[in-house]
Length: 239
Image (cartoon, rainbow, N blue to C red):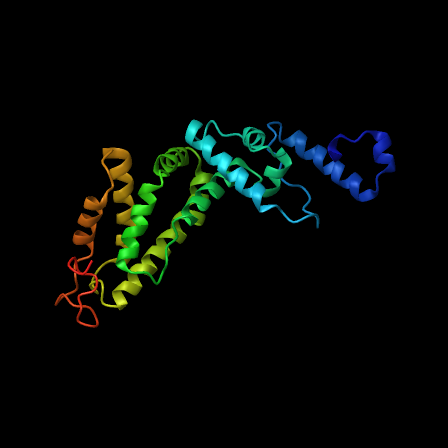
């Protein structure tokens, strides 16, 4: 690394290399635990998406095994078979890596804003079925002690997810699948909370029977029981 060039090497290096070496040495002295961010992002080779995938998969495994407290950038790099620099070039801090893991998992069960009520139910089922809830529970616990992580989670994961879910419900409402007086913002908060509590607090199965109860309770047919085409889209019978 440039931070460890000796004086003879520096004498042969150009002024740019000497500046990078000085910055690296300063960063290492200010980050004794090794959490050194990427100092210079040059025009080098494009990032390899396979490395991204390996790092995220490894970080996920470590979080599941050891929780937030047991996660370290060094351990992730070693287990993923990549350099620490490769990790820090992508995510400068541990919290950034954790948020990237959560975003990656959220993307595996996307929310289609133009989807139907059935799509909303399927999304809830997908979240419960992936086995990611215990991982999320550990992060939520850490958020109580880590305001920066909590804020990043709210800004980058929770608010966008809630907005997309509310958009889905709004479009369903416009199609006549949902009553016009339903509080969409509240509903978009309550449904994921029910799944989280069911899976993590009560320990009960989030199966088809439970999801059907959610459908019948929170998605009753609009007044008259018929959608815009008189077919009752969104009603329990139609679903």
